[in-house]
Image (cartoon, rainbow, N blue to C red; front, side):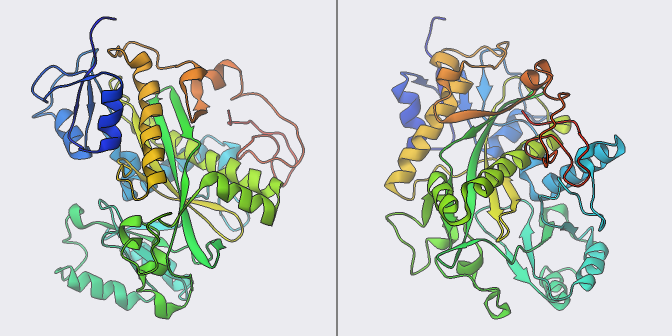
Amino acid sequence: MAGKVKWVTDIEKSVLINNFEKRGWVQVTESEDWNFYWMSVQTIRNVFSVETGYRLSDDQIVNHFPNHYELTRKDLMVKNIKRYRKELEKEGSPLAEKDENGKYLYLDFVPVTYMLPADYNLFVEEFRKNPSSTWIMKPCGKAQGKGIFLINRLSQIKKWSRDSKTSSFVSQSTKEAYVISLYINNPLLIGGRKFDLRLYVLVSTYRPLRCYMYKLGFCRFCTVKYTPSTSELDNMFVHLTNVAIQKHGEDYNHIHGGKWTVSNLRLYLESTRGREVTSKLFDEIHWIIVQSLKAVAPVMNNDKHCFECYGYDIIIDDKLKPWLIEVNASPSLTSSTANDRILKYNLINDTLNIAVPNGEIPDCKWNKSPPREVLGHYEILYDEELAQGDGAERELRSRPGQTPGPKGGRSRDTGRTVLTTWK
């Protein structure tokens, strides 16, 4: 196709601009004809809004889905996952199986969460069942650890409510909505420190679902050793792994930035816990990412002009169970170290190779299924069309002792064969 891709961005980051320039693409302004717009979540709102939005043509693509917030707002993600579980339960799906305590065997991957102010009474009921538990409060629409605090007494919530200048929870606007989640107080520690995983997942289409996992994710470590002691609940250097917070700690290391690659984590776990349990852990991480995407797929506006690269945040507990904490629509492209810059440059490079095949002017009628050789550091995580075409969604596996979780196969307890829904 003749002509060069014309690009616009409202995010002035060198890892983006260097990638556009390397391809010989031409920078234009927003008011000119453009083919590729890497935009902030604020701008995407305007592009697709009823009042100010405009019709995109077949040669234009953007880097967010119109209502990505169904996955990337903390409250909506939880709401959609809860709805997804209920639907699977209604269908009698083996995935929605519960244990004798009413806990999901395979879909229990988000910490118990309530919306405040809406679910305040439900939360109080849950809190009283286990009054020694710690909970973490987060504003629904903020990132980088802003506005987060931990509580272990109901009086702290009441104080927060008063400090929010409201006499009751009812009058709060949705802007001030918070989620409160059971705090994972038994995180897996390495060198005595808490860490989380940042994994990059690219979605090219939701219906059918096609998503890719970036192999070069990383762990973010706290700078201060972890303690579950209630006296340290206010010390965010102990509890929050966000670089935006940790970089202000006196023990922050500017060379490695408190980061480890996922492959280093894997090697460490294989040598300390064994290869089999490590493989199972990573299978489970991939499984919960796919399930979270399946949960939002029915409500996502699957616009053909869109793709999206999400930053998934996962915490692993000391039993090697992974928990989905949140999903970011605009994972940071700021580089805190030299390795970080290389990783993020490659991430954008590989993302563009999938989203804009051959670096040519986009065509939205394209089926969005690139050949494997252009995937770079991405690997296909799930392809719904392939899965259905292969009959993998219906295929029965009979390897003993398997769960219908990450690999499909037999139910853990009964040994009966169930449907697999994996790859």
